[in-house]
Length: 213
Length: 335
Image (cartoon, rainbow over all chains, first blue to last red):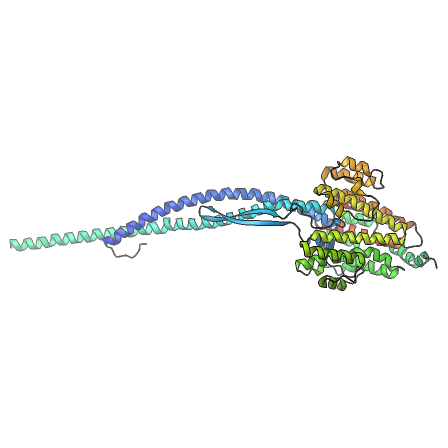
């Protein structure tokens, strides 16, 4: 399908310009897509690794927690952990990957004795609670790294999707359309030229016939 | 009438109630059960059967346990000629409620599900009122002092949840120790001293593992025990030295065995179990007393122990823990 245009030389030049631009854009976007893809695969691989680690660590500490909760009454357990003591400061910055803004989250424990994750008394709590909470606290930085990675992956996937759609639109619709339209105009122009040429020849014949007559 | 004679009726009834405690066979059947439902079924032949009908789901087993605990306290309060005996053991629930209220107030939340109404000696409304109005005048002296100290401290340095637990625990055990001194009952004194000593040894090991300071240790050790751990032991001592120093105490065996596993796996699971068993052995002495408060106390503690066992088994069953993991934590039974 071509674009409806006036088959003029001016339009022809304008479309040629557009075609050139589209081809250049297409090439650039394709490069961008490939690079995004490469980064994406890298991130995905790391993401998978971190996720597996986090999941293993989490299930381990949940199991610990479970055992701790088995030897304490649920009310005592809840009371022990209802008010957390350790505070964590989370700082979010953005990083630019191929003009995609991905979050960079940094964690810093805030306050003194921040490594101390036991906000409870020792009289009626089980020692198993100590270890499971310490383990949970240890997972936090990794958990946040995972959140950062997952968000980056999602954002990149989104961007890849958009870029690919643009590349495809350029490749399969925009560029062929332009090419066809250009072809149409050039044929129309040629046709016009030929018809004016024949008209000229015809007129020339007529004029010459008048002279000889 | 002699003081102990008043217990004739109570002891008679307790002896009957004791026969209804879960025995080792029942517990064993629960442990061996294929599913949590099946384990629960074992309970249907016991005192717990009344609650089972109302239970929609195994996961709500905690409801059964708290209902049973409430029933036992209520019944023993009526049964015991001296309510004070029961009040002694109920006091921990007052302190639990106070801790929850303090923390909830600072979280600006209502956490009614964590409160234990009906178990403690002080009506819950009184505690709620005391915390919300900052007026602790009607509370027992030790509790009142601790609460006022906490409020003053928080006004100055901000809220610290651990302090709530630590100071109130201190107050609770100081209050219990006062009581033990006043009552002059050897059985109660032996039990309480062992409880405090074993808890303190455990706390010592926990503080040592968490690598906290000696000052912190001094703040968490409970009053009322027979050992002065602060001077006996040092946090930097290797485990062998600690074992050695405790070798002349009655807890030598518990510590030796418990610490063995602590060295290998860094868990105090075995120690906690052995300590509970040690205490239960002390509690069991009540069986040889025919008249007096001892059987009542013994039954109460046996019941608390039984509830703990059921919780361990059911938690294990619901989460499909291997049988050994459950056994590892299973306490002895009283009967």
